[in-house]
Length: 112
Ligand SMILES: [Zn+2]
Image (cartoon, rainbow, N blue to C red):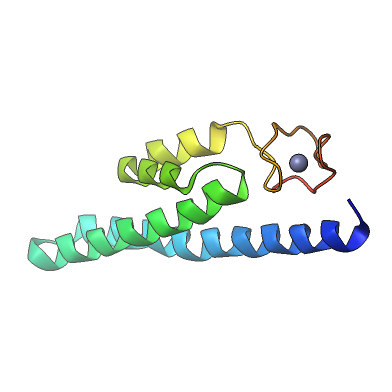
């Protein structure tokens, strides 16, 4: 893998990391706010939060070389996030298991 390709993947990974945080963090916030509220408004706010969290987790799962379907774990809220964080990382580029900061198979940077 050449330097330009490495840099392209590195940028893509950091953009996906920002996307997953940018959607997931407000998602959790809305879920907590919704749970503290009563009535229909609380349910609507909670559902909005779950939607944002799942969108964030799908970016996180893809960044770590997993299927975006893993984002469904967001339905379990904090427990699902923990499971997703503990799954072994795969290479974003070739999906090989990855250890350390660079993929041993294709030379791509490891996901954060
Ligand atoms: Zn690789």
